[in-house]
Image 1 (cartoon, rainbow, N blue to C red):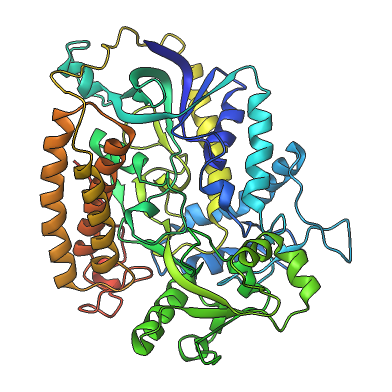
Image 2: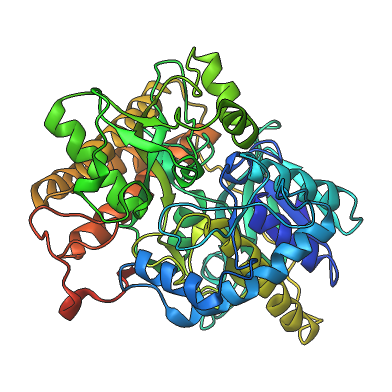
Length: 537
């Protein structure tokens, strides 16, 4: 069974939905997502979107903050382009119906928050559930558009590229590597479907589930990076996994983030005895960049032997806390933590991948007709460490640019079409009776990544991780070709490959910079390493 569209969009977060709305002006769009359409990192984003929207702020200030956060690896032309485009993209969201919080003193103005690393208040938000509001409005607009169709519970297995078609005898030459769509697993029907598109867009989000502790939802298994790399897309800067400093520490809480905005509004990190400690690590104290704050907490925990530190905002008025952070307040209350009276127990957790599939300034990869936007991409905006609330901004800006570039291309290629792609061949594969192999390897990968390739690394830890991941990869490869594919097996295959890419990039970078900290190379080395780490097949 084949499904055709002008544009195939894989992922239903802010980047994928924004692209779809723009692309639907010039063609048909199929959006596929491996879970429900609302499930994804965008829906859980608390803080907001960074943009220059106040008379007291300037583009140059935001550019400077982003460049400093990126530790010398940001591509300044991309930074400048994204930031200067930001206000227009925010206005578009407002025109679509997104309700951002207003200044209580001036109902005509947006309430702008401040977060770590920002020199000014510039975070537009909807209290502490910005992502949910944006996702809800974008979905409403997408569902009302007759040119767009959403396919839930469909997971990508692999891209359909020129090299695959040469191998199958469909075309004769593979001189120009091109993407024609993807094979997807219909999870509910347990069958493989071919989705063909003149343009394919990977908007699959992040890789947080590679690590044992993460703020990401369960779907963040690095699928886009894995399938892109297998198809021959260049991958860059995978060593730069951002660990968010403050995730709720509670045995019954899962993946719940305590927004950076809490520190932006005066929250202070303290140890078990109530003593602030960030002044020891950076002049900006609790508003330092995320890599510094996460590493500082890691040092404090290793010194004290404690399991968590605490984020204290109890010195602020209770009404202010409840109105500014209603979702955080209610969620913590479920765990018997009243944040108006009690400091919040927090630990760092894997949060955001600053590397990914390498793209140009329009989101285009090195494979023809294949775009990557959002967290799956490495655009040059974030460098070695993403500035808070620049992620949703990047998704918006690159979705617009990618859709406009793709539409222009299709306009000049009206006859471009590919049909009769062979159906997925299961060969001699059978149903698995040993899913314990999948669950065991899944757990082992996440633990070894946390212990050996976490916030602080060493050469020896990276070597151990490399040896073990190679053995696990061999086991998965044998298992993959012997048994019929399932969602769990596909996700295991992807997190194993993404782990290998992170380890490889981290081993190549012989310095400490931004989110990559190696005790054997504790200093930043601009002479040799002021550049991206790029790998590909």
